[in-house]
Amino acid sequence: MPFLILLFIVVPIAEIYVIIQVGQAIGALPTVALLVLDSILGAWLLRSQGRRAWADFRDALATGRVPHREILHGALVIAGGAFLLTPGFISDAVGLLLLIPPTRAAIAAGITRMIVRRGPLRWTGVVVQPGRPAPPRPYAEPVDPDPPRELEPPGR
Image 1: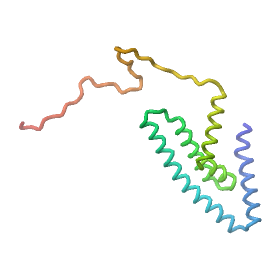
Image 2: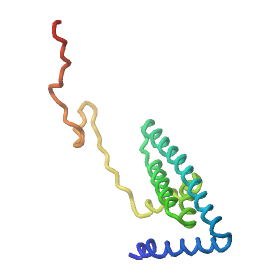
Image 3: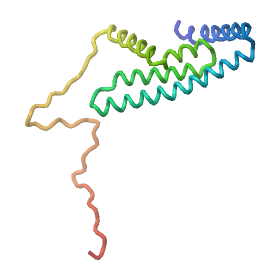
Image 4: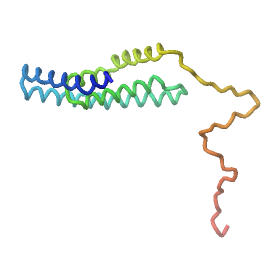
């Protein structure tokens, strides 16, 4: 509950306060222009980093690796884009931190350490003995014992 109070009450008030302070320091039009420029830069960065995260994900799958790191980076890119969509300087700063590769890597490492610190991860493995067929997977589509055949055109 305290997190939701922080998220929905304190953060918007802080955003409004910072926008007002910046507006008083540099003027209203430059403040709006800065927010628009920041949004344009963030959209460009979101697009480029999103494509990079997707390419890294596909490369991991192509090499047969589990793309856990790529999924985390992709989620952080999405979160960074969401922060950039929210108007304000604080959320834009957080969004940019999530979109810049070095800071995103540091944040991802911190999240990974936090997850590992929570406790051991439990993995399930299946051992298939040589000479025996693998057990059927419950999510695999059933195999049709009589697959459809191509029909020959009439007159042959």
